[in-house]
View 1 (cartoon, rainbow, N blue to C red):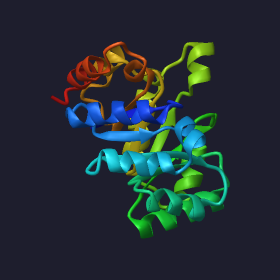
View 2 (cartoon, rainbow, N blue to C red; view 1 turned 90 degrees about the vertical axis):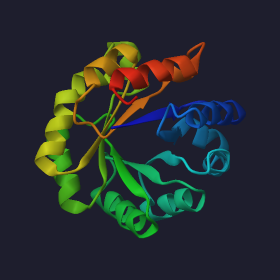
View 3 (cartoon, one colour; view 1 turned 60 degrees about the vertical axis):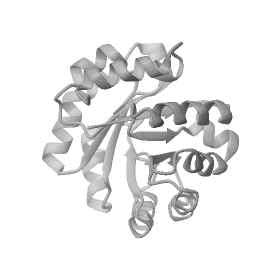
View 4 (cartoon, rainbow, N blue to C red; view 1 turned 120 degrees about the vertical axis):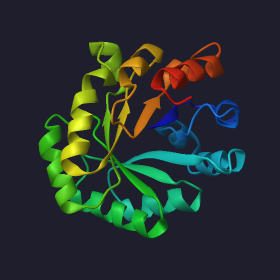
Length: 216
């Protein structure tokens, strides 16, 4: 299991400073250049993060919907090791994205945010493309309006991994309390955003989450 911090910020300097502190302190394994950060600064945000943390796993949360080969190539050229394409994208786009990613040594995360019939779509995606991770994701707006979090998806994530032999990531409202429920579960990457990034003492929260996940 790896701990990923989602830097869904709009201030690049603040994001870089936080990434340096968290990764430099051995508190996170993957640094996510969040979609808002990429929209605010473009691929410069990815390259800046690579310079700040040269040995880190960098995840570019592109949420690609079209032009799969072009977008994943841009992410790779700017230092990303992982990148995301939406499960809601055409299977052609997911296939193009994943084929190019494989050539470039970039891991493909298929983000299932907003997908209702997850099981059916997982089968469609895996029949069409070779991907590295299925990403189950409760978005911020859903968390806020429906009070749902990724905790509700733990069993489903494990089931998808077991049946399909694919990696799984879990994102959406994970905090220190939820981390205790994830401890020992067969999840490859646990993604934490606001619980860390909005905390008064982010390093302390990251340390607690890491401890609760059993990663210390």
